[in-house]
Image (cartoon, rainbow, N blue to C red; front, side, top):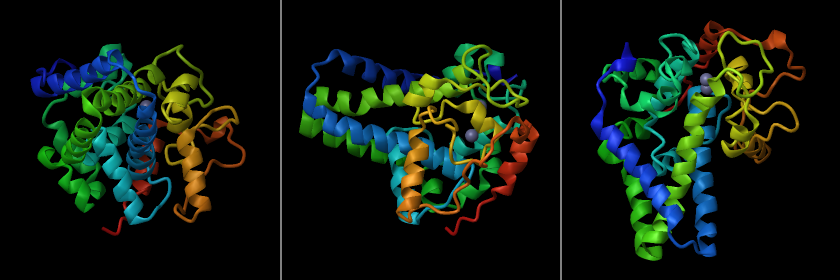
Length: 295
Ligand SMILES: [Zn+2]
Ligand SMILES: [Zn+2]
């Protein structure tokens, strides 16, 4: 079972180090000026992950201009969210096998494993599987380039170096590594907390354990309404009720109004339990979303 795979020491050290930099950042002196950097950087990296990697690239819930895709892909690389091919491959497989023994990050294997340990114990052969499930993503030239670790880290290093030489060590830690600490743990909480029985609520009777969690929804740019998402994987909105704050949904809506997003899969007017789909159904929806990418 992949759960007992050997620890990938390099990934372990890198993830630990990145989080430590965030924690150390919190202990350094904060300057209010940092907010002018933190807010846009947090937004760029966060939306790069939720809007681009997840709602666009994995589920193809809408279309947008090529230049915007590139900017958002770069944002996700700045916060080292994970190379797009691996990210999409792992996530599509999660929808296919949600909360079964084969689900790569389900709390059925224990909370720490669902939250972060799966990244550290992932068998190398899963890489090939990701490539199969994200074959459409491999066709995008910059996603293919981002598969090479040496190239993938460049946007991150460029931002980190610029911040270090302009704002000093504390400025770099506050403006880059503190937002990354939040983005990482909120993203991982979607995999762990949003699949835990009793933590949150269910609006749809899906075949997995997915749950909606308001707070993860707020801090995770809307990704916390995970039961809604498992029920309608291609839907560009995860927050469906008026109080389910979903920042990514509002950004997609704004882009659509500006003509920068089209073919948006919005929720059906009346979302009832009958709209819910099984894991297999979700997988079918995924395959129906086959890349029409022109790159
Ligand atoms: Zn899930
Ligand atoms: Zn998804």
